[in-house]
Image 1 (cartoon, rainbow, N blue to C red):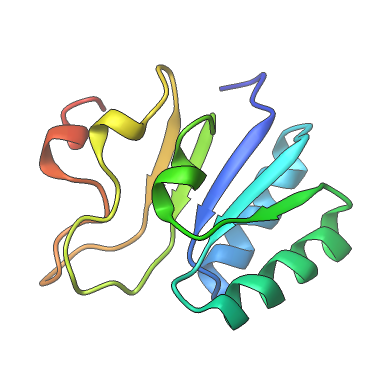
Image 2: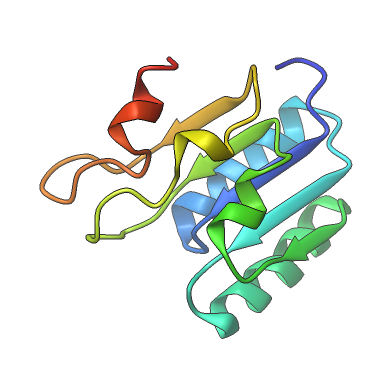
Amino acid sequence: MPDAKVAGILGSGSTARAHALAYACARRLELFKVYSPSLEHRKIFADWLKMKTGVPVQALDNPEAVVRGSQIVAACTSSRFGSIVKKAWLEPGVHFTGVQTGEGGTELEPEGLKLF
Protein backbone atom coordinates (compact mmCIF):
# COMPACT_ATOMS: atom_id res chain seq x y z
CA MET A 1 0.00 0.00 0.00
CA PRO A 2 1.99 3.02 -1.24
CA ASP A 3 0.05 5.57 0.83
CA ALA A 4 0.20 3.61 4.09
CA LYS A 5 0.49 5.84 7.15
CA VAL A 6 0.06 3.33 10.00
CA ALA A 7 2.12 0.18 10.55
CA GLY A 8 1.29 -2.44 13.15
CA ILE A 9 4.05 -4.69 14.44
CA LEU A 10 3.33 -7.84 16.46
CA GLY A 11 6.44 -9.01 18.27
CA SER A 12 9.40 -7.16 19.74
CA GLY A 13 12.48 -9.13 18.79
CA SER A 14 15.07 -8.70 16.06
CA THR A 15 12.70 -9.72 13.26
CA ALA A 16 10.11 -7.19 14.41
CA ARG A 17 12.79 -4.51 14.60
CA ALA A 18 14.06 -5.27 11.10
CA HIS A 19 10.57 -5.16 9.60
CA ALA A 20 9.71 -1.91 11.38
CA LEU A 21 12.87 -0.20 10.13
CA ALA A 22 12.24 -1.43 6.58
CA TYR A 23 8.69 -0.06 6.61
CA ALA A 24 9.92 3.27 7.98
CA CYS A 25 12.41 3.50 5.11
CA ALA A 26 9.89 2.51 2.43
CA ARG A 27 6.88 4.60 3.55
CA ARG A 28 6.20 7.99 5.10
CA LEU A 29 4.63 6.55 8.20
CA GLU A 30 2.78 8.68 10.72
CA LEU A 31 2.34 6.03 13.40
CA PHE A 32 3.58 2.65 14.56
CA LYS A 33 1.40 0.47 16.76
CA VAL A 34 3.25 -2.34 18.54
CA TYR A 35 2.34 -5.33 20.67
CA SER A 36 4.29 -7.92 22.61
CA PRO A 37 2.78 -10.10 25.33
CA SER A 38 5.57 -8.90 27.63
CA LEU A 39 4.86 -5.37 28.87
CA GLU A 40 8.57 -4.81 29.45
CA HIS A 41 9.53 -5.93 25.92
CA ARG A 42 6.69 -3.89 24.43
CA LYS A 43 7.85 -0.71 26.14
CA ILE A 44 11.52 -1.25 25.29
CA PHE A 45 10.64 -1.89 21.63
CA ALA A 46 8.35 1.16 21.43
CA ASP A 47 11.01 3.45 22.91
CA TRP A 48 13.71 2.02 20.61
CA LEU A 49 11.51 2.35 17.51
CA LYS A 50 10.62 5.98 18.29
CA MET A 51 14.30 6.80 18.84
CA LYS A 52 15.40 5.07 15.60
CA THR A 53 12.68 6.40 13.28
CA GLY A 54 11.25 9.56 14.84
CA VAL A 55 7.78 8.15 14.14
CA PRO A 56 5.29 8.20 17.02
CA VAL A 57 4.72 4.75 18.56
CA GLN A 58 1.74 3.40 20.50
CA ALA A 59 2.51 0.36 22.66
CA LEU A 60 -0.83 -1.47 22.90
CA ASP A 61 -1.94 -4.30 25.15
CA ASN A 62 -3.53 -6.62 22.57
CA PRO A 63 -2.94 -7.72 18.97
CA GLU A 64 -6.38 -6.68 17.75
CA ALA A 65 -5.76 -3.04 18.68
CA VAL A 66 -2.54 -3.11 16.67
CA VAL A 67 -4.00 -4.75 13.57
CA ARG A 68 -7.24 -2.74 13.31
CA GLY A 69 -6.59 0.51 11.46
CA SER A 70 -3.11 -0.46 10.27
CA GLN A 71 -2.44 -0.44 6.54
CA ILE A 72 0.75 -2.47 7.09
CA VAL A 73 0.86 -5.37 9.53
CA ALA A 74 3.91 -7.47 10.34
CA ALA A 75 3.42 -10.51 12.56
CA CYS A 76 6.94 -11.29 13.76
CA THR A 77 6.26 -13.64 16.62
CA SER A 78 7.53 -16.89 18.00
CA SER A 79 4.02 -17.83 19.12
CA ARG A 80 3.43 -21.55 19.20
CA PHE A 81 -0.21 -21.12 20.11
CA GLY A 82 -1.57 -20.90 16.59
CA SER A 83 -3.07 -17.92 14.85
CA ILE A 84 -3.04 -14.60 16.66
CA VAL A 85 -4.40 -12.44 13.80
CA LYS A 86 -8.05 -12.70 12.78
CA LYS A 87 -9.31 -12.01 9.26
CA ALA A 88 -11.96 -9.62 10.62
CA TRP A 89 -9.28 -7.32 12.03
CA LEU A 90 -7.59 -6.66 8.67
CA GLU A 91 -8.30 -3.48 6.74
CA PRO A 92 -9.13 -3.72 3.02
CA GLY A 93 -5.94 -3.52 0.97
CA VAL A 94 -3.69 -4.22 3.95
CA HIS A 95 -0.11 -5.35 3.40
CA PHE A 96 0.36 -8.33 5.72
CA THR A 97 3.64 -10.03 6.49
CA GLY A 98 3.68 -13.18 8.59
CA VAL A 99 7.03 -14.73 9.33
CA GLN A 100 6.07 -17.88 11.20
CA THR A 101 5.42 -21.20 9.54
CA GLY A 102 5.78 -24.77 10.62
CA GLU A 103 4.46 -26.73 13.58
CA GLY A 104 2.75 -23.78 15.27
CA GLY A 105 0.91 -22.85 12.09
CA THR A 106 0.81 -19.30 10.81
CA GLU A 107 0.13 -16.09 12.67
CA LEU A 108 -2.89 -15.31 10.46
CA GLU A 109 -5.91 -17.59 10.80
CA PRO A 110 -6.60 -19.81 7.73
CA GLU A 111 -9.63 -17.74 6.64
CA GLY A 112 -7.43 -14.66 6.55
CA LEU A 113 -4.90 -16.36 4.32
CA LYS A 114 -7.59 -16.57 1.63
CA LEU A 115 -7.42 -12.77 1.28
CA PHE A 116 -3.99 -12.95 -0.29
